[in-house]
Structures are given as C-alpha cells and as structure tokens.
Length: 149
Length: 149
DNA sequence: AAAACAACGGATACCGATGTCTGTTGAAGG
DNA sequence: CCTTCAACAGACATCGGTATCCGTTGTTTT
Image (cartoon, rainbow over all chains, first blue to last red; front, top):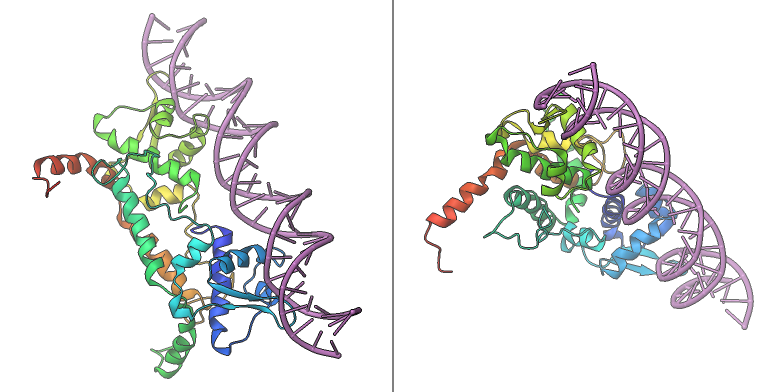
C-alpha cells in the first residue's frame, strides 16, 4: 500500500470533516470513527496529530467534537501527511549515503527524486477541497446527458 | 517513508545489478548486501521475490550469484514493486467501499486516484536504465562548463 | 455544585513486517 | 567422486506500527 494506516486514516477523517465543514457542526470521535472506518479506540491517536498540527479544532465536553480549523481549500494533503508523522524524507538518499546530492548523486538519485517529486507535487497542490468536489461531480454527472448508459 | 523496507531494498539491489549488467558478471548475495546496504541475512528473502518474478537470474554454486534477466531498459520499477508484493491496489477504495467506482465514487476517490495515478505512471514508464544514467550524468557534468560554481 | 459528556494521555497488548539463524539443495572445480 | 561454493527454504526472534483499555481533564447542562 502507498500510505501507512495512520496516514490513510487521517485522510479519511479529514475527508469526512471537509464534507461537513459547511455545516459548521462538530463531529464526535465515535461518529467519525464509524464514518471513516477507523478503529474506534485508535482514532484519538490519529486526531491528536491533526489537532496539534493545527489542522483540526477539538472541543471537549457536551456538544464537543472535531472540525477543520481552516476551510478545506486551505489545507493541503501534504499538511495532513506531515501531521501524520509521514516524513517525505526528500533529502534522504536511497542508499543512505549522507553525501548524496545532485552534484554527486548515488545511482538511484534520479529515479528516486522523480518518484518523491511526483508524490510531493501532488500532495502540495491538492487540497481537501478536492474531496468535496463529490457533490459537484454528482451534479455534473446528473446534468450531463449520460454517454449511452 | 514512501516505500516499505523490502521494496526499497529491492530498488537498491536492482540498481546495483543494473549498473553491473554490461559486465555480464554475476554478483553474490554477500557482495550485493554490502553494496546495497541490505542486512546480509535478509537479502535472500528480497532476491527470491525478484527471481520468481523473472526479473533476476540466479545461479548456485561456484561462480554463482545474481544478475538481471533482461537489459535494464526492459525492466520497469513497476515490475520491481509488483515483485516485492507491494500491491498498488488501484482498485481498492480509500474507504473500503467495495462499490466505489468512477460513477459512484467515495468522497476521496478523486484525490486518491490522482495520487495512485501519479505513482503508477512514474513506475510504469521508468526503467532501470534510469539508474545507469549516472555515468552519463557524470560525463555530462564533467564535459559541460559548470554554470558558475 | 453535581452530573453527563467527550477529548486527552499514558500503559499495555497485539500482530505483521523485518531480521536472524541453520540446514538443504544444486552447481562447479579438483 | 568428493569438496567447496552459494542460492534456497523454513524455523525462529525481534521490533515498531497498530490497536485496545482505562483513568484524567476540561466543558456543558441541569
């Protein structure tokens, strides 16, 4: 798999919260766990990372729960990855050579950079607004004359 | 990290073998482990996957060792990933919904597809010939007048 | 003030990926 | 034919990410 569990859980939780952002309401951990298919007793760990990273706002007690700290279009997936202690490790050489750099690259440097570059680029430019395009997508699909199906 | 250890080890080993392809000689597991910084007793696991996948040719006994089964430019990183039981899981929904598809997508479907797409595209089009460009790279750097450094 | 609620935080258990060890099989050289 | 070499194969140990549990803290309601 491309992401570890924690990072994938974070993606899902953020997707739910993004979809719920306009309502302004908070989502409780238990609900969130169910909606995002995250183990109920594990979600607190996942959310904690997102909270301390400042991406999610938490409130305790009656009526408490989680919601995005910013609008979805102001939160990139890169931030979510970083929050989930998923280090992109751009600088680490594939061979573990400390001295590996563009001028004195290890033999994997080129390919390795390309791979990381493509993921990082995606993560930096894609925001949580992308997940909300669902409604639009549905709307578009519905309004457009279906090809032939 | 982007890849699990086994997959990364496989990348490194293949890079070494690719660099050694022209010589036609085989590389013993012990050497390979040292060159690719793979735990000496773990490398047999890594290499076996590559062998059964038909990417690497193994020979036992005196003068034995490993070498690529095909020229580097005929082996894509996707094949290496597949061999390392790194399932790209294109079809799996990020939410675990069996019914998730382009016509009835989950809310992460778009973003998820993009991410996988970018990695898969890279892996499919990039071959082990890429790692050999090292020599060329060095040659180019040497021949070119350095910009200003 | 008390009770209910819900996130926080640490301690612990679990499990699969990773790493180690030992013996076996197959190939080449003497 | 025997020895040596080196990949193969499986059993076992280890480690870290994952998951569970439980008590604590802070907030709201009554």
